[in-house]
Image 1 (cartoon, one colour):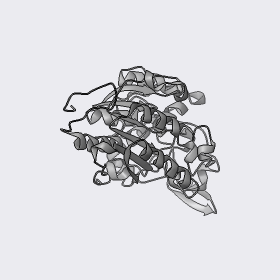
Image 2: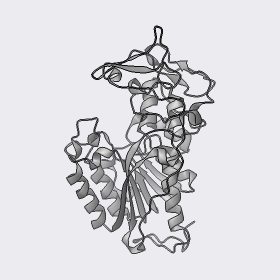
Image 3: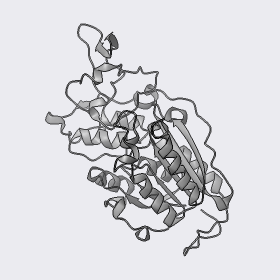
Length: 338
């Protein structure tokens, strides 16, 4: 089955769908920092225009559309401007293309803030638009831990099937939680980044380097360390806020919104880019290309965990197995989707 990828980033969602047997026929993202990483790992060029400048007619027909419109506008940790932010409005560009292309299914991913009290009215408008253009909607808040990802990462997943199919997506069964030991326990010691956090060259394990520099008062306002037998805190898009490696000294609370490291001579470091990628369930042969490690952390943190994506994709593949389908419009697909 063929898939259109929008807001692709470095392609975590895409890789999960590819691992489930789907083929990406079009990808788009206007973040210049992801272009080389996407091209080298997915072996295809990515359309680097803003989605607002792309006509639906320029996009090939496909069985599905996947993507996570920018989440910063809806994040509980951000300004919470939602659709009042230009990035928040991009969700409606996703709907525009969906309406024009009319694929059998779509998958959209976003942060939990999109269903917060502040944004729920706007979110309901988005769901109404999906329904109005002909889709049966399944929507759930999920935790990536339930799908083989050793990370506490809560997201909202929206899946739509064409109403003509008379079928609704059911979220896959939850899996046993994996630990940090499962994810990164076999990795050798990581290298610190070079001066000004520029990347190292020819590392034994690609991208196995961590950001240097001190920790802000915001960083030190709460615990940042999880043990080997726990799941990581959420991998964020900023290296400054990367969680601590589980071998780091423990942290303890010394005041309101104020923590410190235990011991007279504490040892600590941030997780490396590769460790974050492992926690996001990227394989080691998925290489991230960047000149400064901050860009590496950004790509990894913005991605959908690969195993979460594969779990969703595999369920879709099962639902469509053996279905006799044809896209409404000019293109007629073979009777049996492969």
